[in-house]
Image 1: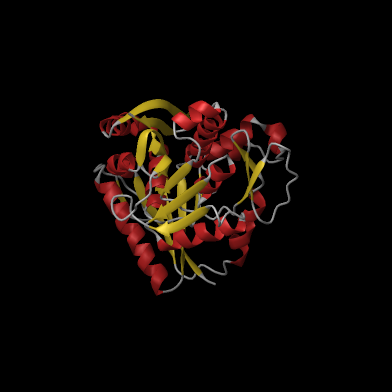
Image 2 (image 1 turned 90 degrees about the vertical axis):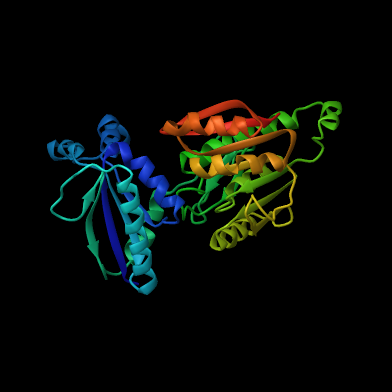
Amino acid sequence: MEYRELRIQTDKKDLELLEAELIGSGFTSMMIDDPDDVIDILEHPDTYRYDYINDSLREDLARKPVVTLYFADDEEGLTEMKRAEALLDTLSAADDTDGSSGAGKTSGGLSIIYREAAAGDDSEWLYKWQEFFKPTRVGERIVVRPSWENYEAKPQDLVIEMDPGMAFGSGLHETTSMCIRALEKILADRGNMPAADAAADGCRSTKILDVGTGTGILAIAGVLLGADEALGIDIDTDAVRVAGENIGKNGLADRITAQYGDLTEGVDYKADIVVANLMADLVIRLSPAAAGHLEKGGWYVTSGILDIKEEIVSKAIREAGFAIEEVLHDGEWCAVVARKM
C-alpha cells in the first residue's frame, strides 16, 4: 500500500507538547527523529557498540527534531493530512512568532518541511519497527510483551500481551508506565489491608474505571494486579474495538468490559479507582465527573500531563474534591495520584 508523509520540524522545547497534541488528536502513525537520541548513543558507546560515532554524528546534534506522520494514499488519507495541517496551524497561531524556511510554511516553532504523495510501498517500514520492541518491564510486576516476542516470565511477573500500535497505551510511554506504577502501589496496599479494615473500607471488591481506555492496557494491568473487575470507556469506537480485542487476547473478557462512553454523561459505574491517561485539558474538564464515579476515599490516577501544566491540573483536581497524595514525574511528564475527600 502506498502512503503519504508529512514531516514537521519543531523546536526541542516544543517536541513533547507537539507529540501529545498529535496523539491526543488521533494521529498515532508517526516517527520521531530527536537529536537527543544521538546524545544517548555518544554517552553509552559500549551499550550501542556503533562503529560510526564520528564528527558527522556529533554535528547531527545541532539540528531540530522532526516528527513524521504517515497517511494512506487515498481520499481518507488526504483528508487526515489536511486535518493534521489544520491542527499545526492552530498550534502555531498560539505562539505567533515569525520564522523562515525555504521548504514550507513556518509559524511559531513549527515548520512543515516535506510533503509527498505516493511515497512508495509501506511493507518495509510497516514491519521494520517491530524489531525495536522487546518485552518491557513496567513497575515491579507488569511486563508488556509484543505478540511476536517470547518471554520467560519470573514467578512474580504479570505479563500483558500488547502490540505497541500506539505510543499511548503500549506501556512504553512514560504516562502509561506512571499510571501502572501508581495502580501497582494502590492495589498492593489494598491487598495487604487487614480483613476487618478492608470490610470497613468497602475493599472486599475492587472496581476500576479506565477513562479513555485506548488499548485497554490500564484496565488489564489493574485486574492483573488484583482488582476484581474493570470498565474501560472511550469516545473513539476504534479504541473500544482494539481494547476489546486486547482484553480477549489476555483472557480477561469475563472481568473487563470495553464500551463507548463519555464520562460526563451516560456512564453509570461506581468505582474504587478511576484512572485517566488523557491530556491536561481533558483531565481538568473531567475531574468533577470522575469524583462523581467514586465513593469517599476512592482513588483518582491521572496522567498525560506535561510538567509545565502540573500546577493548573493539580488545582483543578483539588477543586473537584480530591486530596493529592502523590505526583510522579518521568521525563517531561507527570502523573497525579489523588483521593476523594
